[in-house]
Amino acid sequence: MERFLDLPVLGVEAIHSDCLLAFTFEHPGSATEIVISTDEFTAVCPWTGLPDQGTLIVKYLPGRSLLELKSFKYYLLSYRSVGIVQEHAANRILDDAARVCAPQRMEVTLDYLPRGGLRTVVTARYPNALGLGAQL
Image (tube, rainbow, N blue to C red):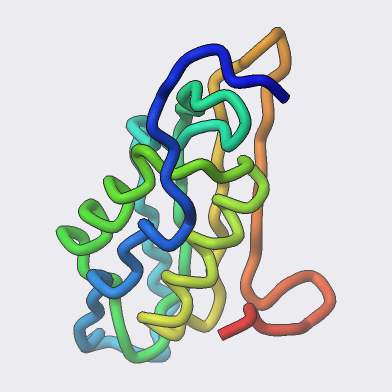
């Protein structure tokens, strides 16, 4: 597909998963569900360079660790100029977050603003519906 604007599009190697941190959860085994959300998630279309914006919701039942929020915010900001398809973004966020905090279960939902009249909502789960873990 021809690019109409000369917008910088970075590859997935620009995603800073190494900045993600976790800390000890003092109540493992409890039925505590954590919900983190932002309506400021932005990546770009890998073909056009146009922004894909939406709401991100992360729900998880922690194991022994919690996802540190400041590091998660910086991690999400690293997507800002990354060319990644919407379905892959949700799965990449799930894989990276689950790798860092080792939850009992986690769900990542990206609800994108409509583009071209089409609204996309992507939900990725750990462990997945087949009972398999994320590719950690």
